[in-house]
Image 1 (spheres, one colour):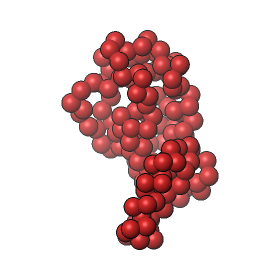
Image 2 (cartoon, rainbow, N blue to C red):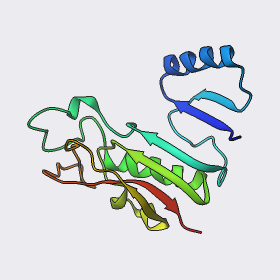
Image 3 (cartoon, rainbow, N blue to C red):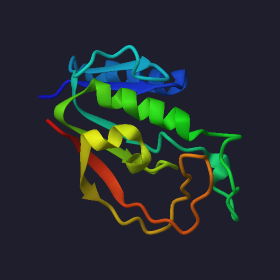
Image 4 (spheres, rainbow, N blue to C red):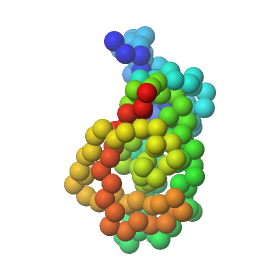
Length: 148
């Protein structure tokens, strides 16, 4: 059975998780309030899931803003996924879905191979390295394997 660590920047979300954990009493689960993986050990995870983490709801408007830098920055995304990569063991899996940036645009992406693509029912707004809107861009890659 796997050990699972849940991190969330929102203390209310972690409180809900810990409350549920007290009811099921599973010693393989733990939850912590954290805005990054900076406190996690290097090469300590087999898989990391970042689902709907790297996005901002105020950018989900039509038409989308030409730039996202007043809410979210590519540089912060790149810094975060680079640290996620540090935490993964070689061969580990990184899932990033519903992000407003493409993992392939990061420098650390060269250490990974895409292994799963998902074709979403609707277009997800994307921004580039310069925080500029990428109109009508389709990016289906959601799961990546860290190269050995």
